[in-house]
Image (cartoon, rainbow, N blue to C red; front, side, top):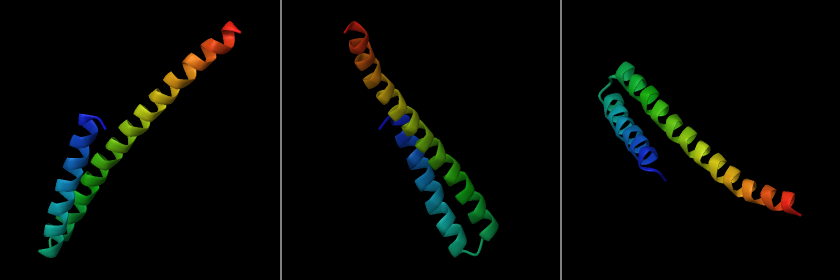
Length: 71
């Protein structure tokens, strides 16, 4: 995993922990806001991971296509 993905996941985890504390204290609006923000960070991390996987697949396919063309 990239450092950026790790950073995004850590941020999401921190916000989730804060949201749990806020909910325990009855601060439901704050908790909901923190959960939404945590979800955004988590989604960004997932998108970056998906992009990285797509790029890896594309690099694997390119050499195979070059070999096919040479035959």
